[in-house]
Length: 415
Image 1 (cartoon, rainbow, N blue to C red):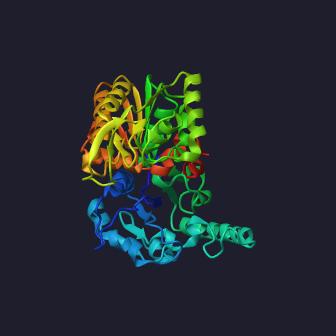
Image 2 (spheres, one colour):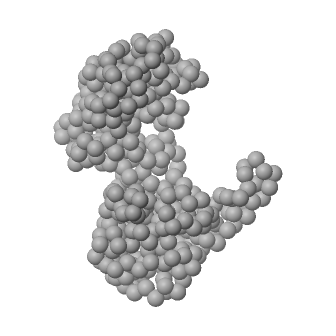
Image 3 (cartoon, rainbow, N blue to C red):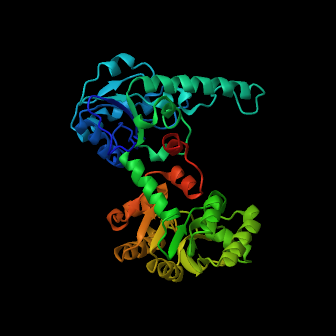
């Protein structure tokens, strides 16, 4: 069943969204992107004449009630976005009565799901090393099912529109779907867009395909890099991981970030790229600083010859040209991870060069997907969100999908 084909008239829909929005010290939302992302799904249900029960997590309260993470802080914002006065259930597991009273066109927001350890389904009071852990885990899984059953009991149908948590087998993202038949559970519109975008990157490729992988450590991206090796024409590796490659190839990297225990792994990646005919693009120069700060002294040096006491903080001008050339002719582009410490204004040039090249390629007809928190923050910092094809809301979920893993939140609905 798809959301577009379902008529919610007279039905109660429980919708899992990702309203884990950043709040300032006064409990005010500093970025409402995630709320805005879910609006098409929520408004479709209300427009049909359905009643809406919204559930989400916020932060990591670890199964304990914590006012800092209460969703009561966002009730007014959600009300304003929907144009409906949103009711609030202060206990997500004890909302049967208020859910039962909900009428068509009304909206109920449940309190933070993660105030219950049952949501994540992991024991919180027994460590993994404890012999009792396995028994505690089984007991918690049984409780998780009961928790999911309670959530399901509030509604006639279930919608998952939280791609950001689709890689988790939590009560509200996967287990709850077991209590609805195939005609009464579906992906939300945002989730459908995410699934389509990932499918374009993995299975519906227009060539050439260029992937840009950044990040401080190669170890955190190895699964993605290996899965992409069979799909891409050009693979740009940038950010902190550059210096592990430079060191593995015999260079000196000063005090740059470097995973000494991954040098053999890096050489394997280089060999695999060669075997598969993938054009592996690595930096040749960098902007090095004598301190990890915006106002440090800088110099442009070869990536494999960084002086002692200096560290690479951004891609250099020659590297920027190399990256841009590998991007501009592409028809499919994936960007995950910036080229430097873009949070510091003086080290944004490398990432901006990537963003500019992606925008140019997109304008020429390429499909470009930006995903992963830092890349999204980067493209937003540059004010270029409207210059790319798609910006993914799911950090970890997107990365696991690109690795080729099955996402429980999607499998629970699509099988």
